[in-house]
Length: 101
Figure: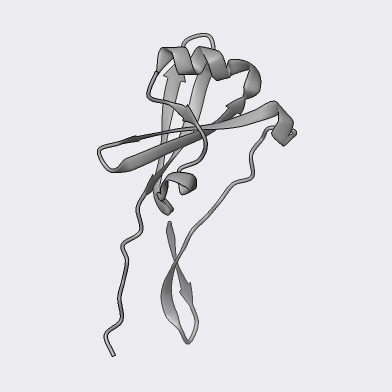
């Protein structure tokens, strides 16, 4: 999340996303896990899937969005032996806002 100032409007909060550095979706897989109300998701090369899942049995194939976690909550780097640094995007569940009429 980033705050920017727009003339005549004021400060607004925007989400910033990066495109994956991996070449093709066939070469990559998304893994996620939910812990303490926060979902962590990483896209890794498919060849590392089995190794990463063995190291952390809580990781499963899929995305945080598929589990209902869609609100951006930052990122965290995690170092895995034989794989290197993996950047996890962190998400929380968006709060439902009900309008009263």
